[in-house]
Length: 338
Image 1 (cartoon, one colour):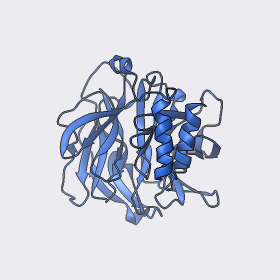
Image 2 (cartoon, one colour; image 1 turned 90 degrees about the horizontal axis):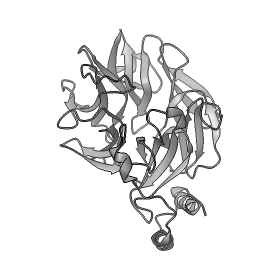
Image 3 (tube, one colour; image 1 turned 180 degrees about the vertical axis):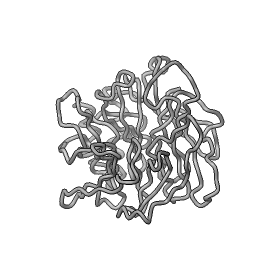
């Protein structure tokens, strides 16, 4: 059986993995199953361009290694399932080869703790609120020749279907829409795919554009947070999902030369904190790569006078981005090349 039939259809599509009877059977299988990959291929950590997932608390600036996909040089864009024990991610076998990106799931708890499986080509996965489906981006030029854009599949990787053009999909907490970045118009807009009737609507794109990466939902599905391009500057901003320009809020504006905000940001579950990346172009490394010299910062959203605080004690590594809060709001998982 291939990867134990995708971990018994990902604990029966994430719904039955929490019953004691099922846990007992799965634990017995997991103990004797040697075909599942281990959580890390150690030699890759020593290779140039290695990028893994790390965990950190804003109050404790010491990041701890969490996971890297076996056989992959880069593991990124993590998102926790709503049950909190499965972590979706994307990974590539060679540095910066995004067309080869594959989606995987890592078990942080339960009978398959420490194991990972791959679900096929795609990147930037986002769970449905019931954890039974995943929406994702499939890049044009992918190895299977499928149309690029926003796709959806069951959580075990089956029943893939194309939804619309766009990039960086994020499933709304209320389950009604999938938000994505529309890059076919300048400036870029935010699009919303309606899961009930298949229609698409757009916001922004006139006086305010959306920087690379799209947006992030508030926990109540009423606002979205993103990096805005306005008046030739980049801003950390939010707006109501209606797109009403009067609801636009500028949270922070980057004014330093050779520093740029990079999206998307990540908002804590209780809405109290926001984490975002700033690219420091004053650091010269002799390389010219996407997201090079990005470092994570955070702000308390209730304090309009607060200045960004570096998430770690120092600027560590070459790339730090793709962050996601743990469900309890106490820590953050992010991808880093260091």
